[in-house]
Image (tube, rainbow, N blue to C red; front, side, top):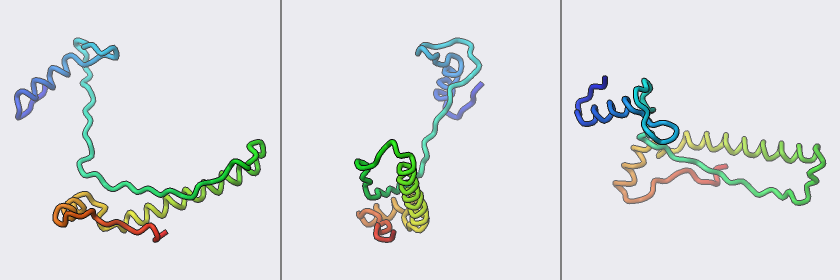
Length: 120
């Protein structure tokens, strides 16, 4: 049985437990498994993106494994380097945390600053 400080919520959870949804969308009686509960992250962090230069592959011979491998390794290396830089710079971002950023933006009515792209 479910106990809750809110009686309506408790009875709703009990009803879901007693007859969960089936794969076909109906209700199944006497199933002992309750439905999964999903909770969103309450304090979202910033997302960091980096777009590198485009690669011209129109002159690349797709049948030449050695040439393809070299291009792949170079792209992979640049992507990995970009990810490492973004992780380092995100740790130094003074407004990375949601609460700090929210307070700054609320009190100043300005977008919270972040690092400069030229720092790469």
